[in-house]
Image (tube, rainbow, N blue to C red; front, side, top):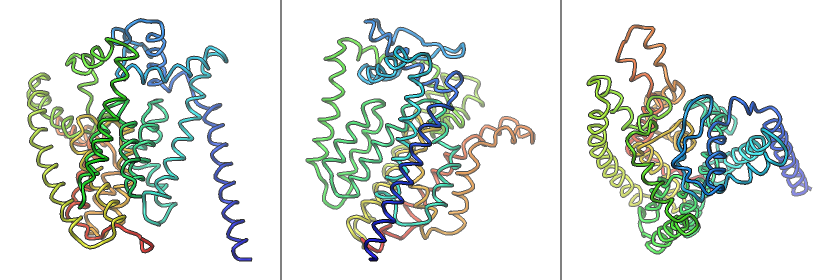
Length: 405
C-alpha cells in the first residue's frame, strides 16, 4: 500500500510539473512582447535569412530598434534559425518568436530539473528556486527577454556536467563538444576529465576531436565563411568588444573600464587590460589546479569529488572568461548555492549572498557623489564569483557529497 501511495504521489508530482510547464510555455507563446523583446533572436533570424539567400551574413549588420548588430555565430549555428523563419513565413509575423519562447521556457524548466535531480545535493528547493530567480540580475529573465540562445547552450553544458558527476566521461566530452559549437568557449570545460586522480585522456582526445570535426563542418557546408567568422571576432572595431558593467561582468571588462576611465584612451586601456588578464588568468588557473589536487587527494567519494571539482572549475572559468554576459550567470547559480550551503565562514557566505543579490548599484553610487569611482559599483556579480571561487577553493572543507553517495 505504501509503495502504491508513493507511486501515486510521484505520478501526481510528474503530472503537476508537466501541467505547469505546459501553462508556462503557453503563457510565453501568447504573452511575450515580440515587438520589444527577443532582439538576439531577430538578429540571428535575419543573419540566417541572409545566409540562406547565398549572401555573406558577416558583411551585413542586422538592425533592431535603429541599432546595428553583427552576426557572431558560426554559419551552421545560423542555419539552426531557419525553422523559426519558416514558422514566421507560414503563420505570420511574430510566430517564430513565440515558438522560440516556448522552447526557451522548456529549456529553463529542464535546466532547473537537471540542477535538482543530477547536479545539487538534496536541499531546500524553494529557497534555491528563489535564489535562481533573483540572484545575479535574474539571468533566466535576461536570457528570455533577449531571446539569446544562452539557455540552450547552458542546458547542454549542464547536461555535460551531470554526465561528469555520473562518471560518464565520454558522454561528458560529447556534450561539451556540442555546447562549444556556438561560442567556442565552453570547450574550456573539457580538461575536467584530466583534473582528477586518474585523468581520462581518451575522453579528452575524443571530445577535442569531436569538437574540431563538428566545427570543421562549417567550412565544408559554407566554404569561405569560417574565415569571415574569425575576422569578425578579431575585429577591434566591433562594439561588443567594449561591453562592460552589468552587461559584461568579466574581470577583463572591469580592468578595461577602470583604465579607460583613468586614461581616456580606449585602445590603450584595452591592450593593458588584456595583459593584466593574462597574469590574472595564469594565477587563477594555478591556484585552481592546486586546490583541485588537494580535493582529489583528500577523503570522500568519487561522485562527491567530481561534483566539488566541477563547481570550483565553473567558478574559475567565469573568472578568466573574456566575456561574461548577464545571461552567462546561468552557469554560476549551482556553484553559488554550493558555496552558500557549505561550511565556509558565515561572514564569507553573507558577502557572497549580498554581492549576488546586489547586481549593480552604479546609479545609486553616482547619486551619492562617488563620481568616477561609481564604475566599481557595477560589478557586484563579478565580486560574488570571486568570493564563490575563494570559498570553494580554500574555505570549504566538505567534499559536497550527499549521505546516500
